[in-house]
Length: 406
Picture (cartoon, rainbow, N blue to C red):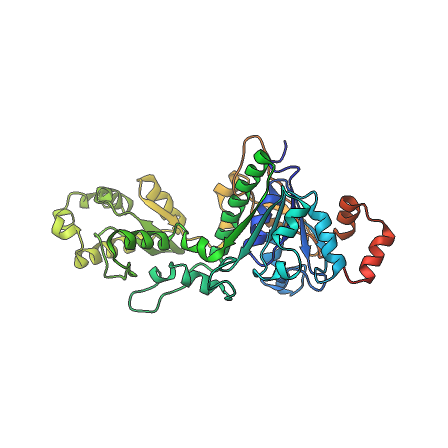
């Protein structure tokens, strides 16, 4: 079995989440990803929790361990002439360079795209920043909350009587990492055909605006009829069907269906087939938007739900064709029988944590493999990469270390 990206050489100058997740995908599918880190601490994600056994340590960050699997770590001080020279030497035979410094940093280091292109014209260089390399927001700072808010999605989440609400932790940055990976692969394909690389200007703000979540729906609605979508509350009911999060005997389930034709499935799910043709529920004036009848249905559903576990509810609902999923804890996810049957999780060993179960392949290919591997220790592969790629000797490396370049 071969790897889809076997032979592709990637220089990874990213940190935190979006950039490292992009390059993680490359590494896990076979690319040789060299992660370039600062000698004095490396990627800041190394100091972000959660930590293995709650022990704060640069080699025990769960976030870093997940985002940097199968990469090789090289420490370079890009503020030194020698460090910048080493990077440009590594650029010569690389296929991809991904960086996510603020737009001013690479040019200020003498590592702008024109300089890098002169060294390797076929290189694909991806520059990830908060708002892009141009425009009035170019140098603005951004947090996860800022990204979610300015992208338009936050306007549509939360309760209508309260302020907008941020959801889903760092999901936007993981989403951005996937978009960036797809963009880079497209550019790499173009370079393989034409022999010419290019520079990609990737703005997290623009990626979020184009996210196929509530924001995209809101933008489409606004474009076509000028209406500004609003957050829906409990009194915003399309019909009497149960929709949303409901309690079961041991947790919660998510029920969803909007079409009147599934009313009979709701009745079968709660073992009340006698209600299928009951006009008290099925007459249009009762079924559509009637809050009192909706409350009656919810009471019937809740009575049944509280007598069953969330997994039993999910299985029963699915058996009658009603959309339902259990709200899984992380323990539930790790013990899910479907994921186990597909062999999703992979066990990865690490010098500081020992063997742990990691999320597996996000997608599978019939004729190419995915690999499970650990994240690197800080600077673990500095000597290996510089001797292998650049032909440097032991004395050369000792001199560079004495100069503070590595």
